[in-house]
Picture 1 (cartoon, rainbow, N blue to C red):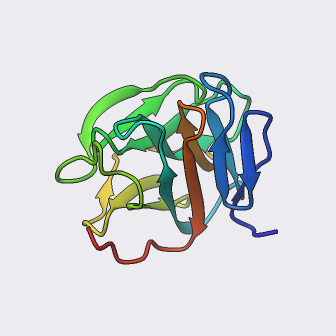
Picture 2 (spheres, helix red, strand yellow):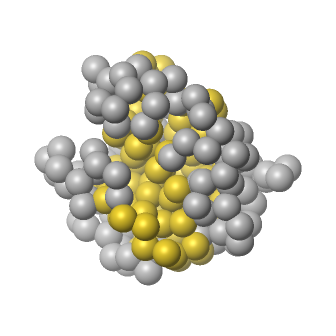
Picture 3 (cartoon, rainbow, N blue to C red):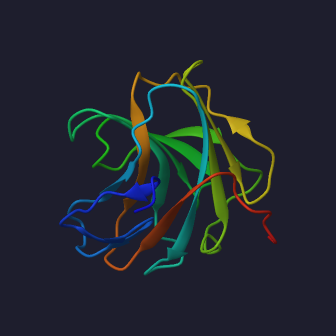
Length: 168
C-alpha cells in the first residue's frame, strides 16, 4: 500500500491515493496519510471528477486531532484559501488568493501542489504550474493531507511529490 494515501472511511470509496465520495452531505472529509510532524513535504492533489463543474472541493492539510479540528484548504472554484475551524464543515473564505484567477468550471485535472514545512510550520500552494503562494498561516504540531468534498461521486487523488507540469 502506498505511504501517501487516503484512509478508508464509511463515506468514501478509497483505493490507495484516490477517494470517491459515496454519501451526499455526510462525512465530507477524506483524511490522508502519512501524519506529518517534522521536515519538509511536497505532495499534490488532482480533482479527478466532479458531479457539478463548479462544485466546491477543498484540498490541503487538516490538524491531526479529533474529528472537529481545523483544516486549511485551497478551493479551486474561488482560487482562494479557506480555513475550516471544523474540518468536516464548510470553511471560511480568507480572501487570500492562491492563484491568479480561479478554476470555476475548469478544476478537473489541474494539479494542486502543497508545500508544507513542519520545521517552520508554514504552508504554501502552487496551482496548475503557477508560482507558489505562501498562505501566511502557522501550522499546528501535527497535520495530515485532506480533501473535503460535498457531492456524492466527487473524486480526488492524492500523490506524493511535486505536481507534474500543467498544460493549462
